Picture 1 (spheres, rainbow, N blue to C red):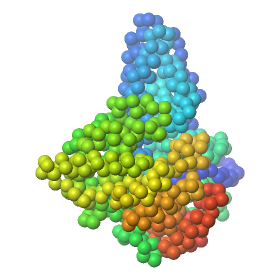
Picture 2: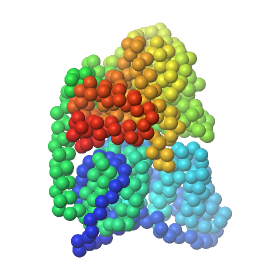
Picture 3: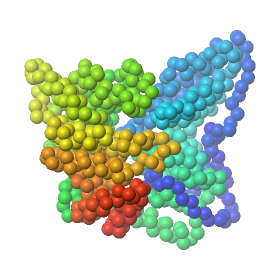
Picture 4: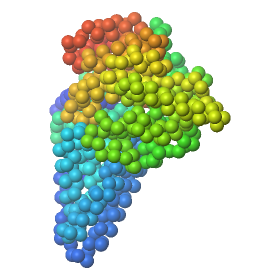
Length: 601
């Protein structure tokens, strides 16, 4: 992979303004650094002698080992900087790299065809990519990109070129590229990269997800920006509205500097709300909770304004060790979270949510399912594997004696699943009581509303639990039949679709009728526009990545509940309006009430 650092053009170049997709907010100005992936590099291919086979296989094994080390290092670096679903992006890379058939096929090409290691890797990778790209399942199709990312690293390591994704820059700049892979994005030197702009990409691509999680302003889908600029050209990047100005004039620079100043002032003001309880301008309480896993620094939650943990993702204990953690290991992790919170704050522990896009070795046939998102995942997996379920339930119950712990069941679709889960819980309570182990006998149980079926039977579910948590990621996906990480249909993933909003309304109404509180723990809760709309719809709590709490809390604090409710009432009457226009309407209405909202997205 080559880094192209063209000399800055001496003459004054024509100003151009391009519009793309705003994927990570922020306003930055700086010189462009044109990054070329070197995809056209020629892969050496030649015949080897039988006596050279062993040497080529050894070279291949060394390259695989180095690539594995590099990816694990990137994964560890990512987990240090962020928590949440984004931190597992490299799991797919490692899964492919650790597949014995991948390395085995490469060795076979070397031994049988007497070809050099580089040629063998290229041939096998091309076959893998074409197979994945032709698959009907969107998640599996994305593995073609992972194979490409891995292949580049292996080939560079075979050639002795070192880290294939190292970006060598010497001054603060805005990276411009055709597209960035997850490896390239996390490899960006954080102290020198002001932002990035790419020709291709979507709001749900891995690079976009990482940009938001890492706080890097970014615009994607700009068409041919990388073909129109030279390294050194001055860029103004507006990651809030999706605009890039190349070689701006004096007036454009002055206007942009005012926007940057206003944005910085607002960023500083976020610290003023972090220590305050979440509430609307007229005093309605809206607690802001954090989505975490066992790698999240619990002591940092207060610093970002969290008022509890709305979603503890237990599956990362399984994924990080690629095995089931023992009951004792789980108890220690859950207890640490419970003890870290101040009195009165709760931690909601979601039981194992493996399946779909998350799987571990030895999980049985689940990972071979044609459509894992609709298969043996989450509560279905646990009910089919009661020993695993009981070990986890016992651990959660044991942790409940050390703090305010709640337990939550994911992917519930029927009342009998909730009954079965509660029966397992009661059985574990009886065991612990007989063993003299303390636990909270009145532990609160909740249901995730993330399947349309659950929303439609919310009234029945509300009679059997103590709270609801709406998982908008899956609720939108399953309602609209859209894979949110599939770029080809990403535009159809719309949180303001009337069907999605009606399901949320049904859930909130049913919960409140039975005295239950409702939280939203999906990604949409971190969007200030959607957060205000949810508050107007009656949602009681919002849970999100810790680094986004201050931002959304600030936005909600500027809106009265009356205004939020009026917005929600208007949206309910817009059933015939396209979802994207509903979102634009909400955003424009809120900007009228709070002009600063433009800088808070």
